[in-house]
Image (cartoon, rainbow, N blue to C red; front, top):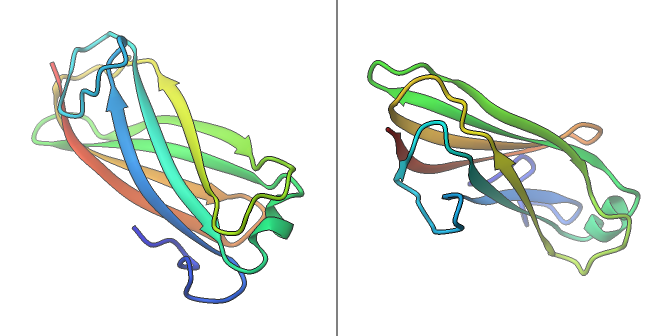
Length: 139
């Protein structure tokens, strides 16, 4: 899903969030059904690029990745996890895709169906991107 500023919409700097995926504790893709109280992993992918991406990101820019669950029905919605990270202080090739993987403890109190959303927000730059993931069931 396009970010702000959208990748390739300017010649300066842009961002797009591209994917959110879930896997179970065994590393098996499990995008739809996840057992309650069992740790699982979420991967959020995003791209930063355009003319000045390498120069700007080389200084180690801080960003947060947040994952939200939005209940479909009677479940409880809220933030599942937020992690602060920084870009690698090495100039990447222009248009490099940064992928951030985090393991989320599944301590969500309610079973149910949930729409998943991830947000990547650069804390010192005016850049944010969103991506909607799959609908998952926690049982």
